[in-house]
Length: 387
Image (tube, rainbow, N blue to C red; front, side, top):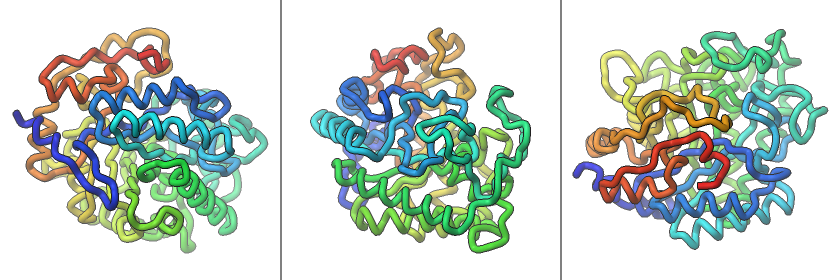
């Protein structure tokens, strides 16, 4: 069957993955006081034992005071990548995943303008963005209470403030490697800080950090270069990006493949190995005139590896569902679309397949699809880490 092609191993730098299935990062918020505990270690280890070749963790806050707070997801118990208690917890997570035969990378995260002021572990810290604005409000499902009444959040970031953020990512990468992670992922999509620099709706600067698509990539370039200095050249760096933003689901970083190359090319040159193209459904065409999805175009314009994500193993775009609900999400059904994914993989459109809610629904999802068995359906209550 076509899906068997996804069993091919893949070597990225010094790391070899057993297959092409990746657990996609999904915020859960079950790390008390920012430190992963035994339940978190067991949660990820079960997915590694269940056949995922790579685990990318939920968003992990860097040690910048404005990095974390309430971003519409709830502010309690989001994990950090700083402090001995948190690093000790991550060391246990990494050891558990390795013991289960898997590889794991943390998704380093700064919420940027999506952080609600007065929340998080440093409530007195300002909410920051490159131009100090939340961005134009378009099609969004954010609760009105989560949308600032004044889109101007504060002053534009100074050069010193930007350099402080760059340094915080480098420190997080250093600490991640010190506890044994197999690489590092960066959250550069969905309206968070790195995306705030890339998107013209939140970056109206005219200095070295903005002005056109290539200059709007400069802060991300600096972060990637800083990470490379700390983790070396051998470990992979994964970069998640998206056209859509929480501020506006119809927003776009690029209208054409050429514009996409202008955004991603400098980031690729800085040292990213894999582009994680976050879309609502994996086979949505990225640009007119072609059926190729965003992951395919990222691979084509950068020459780097790419990862597809969105709707693998489920029936529809469910990104707007409240994943923290205690009730089942009735309209999410497990579907067997993996052979469609695999056929696109065989054409060379992308190199890795990230699976989100379907793998929350069943820790054995990867093994089951390779055995042609039916995985258990997703239920929002699975986020409690009981499965």
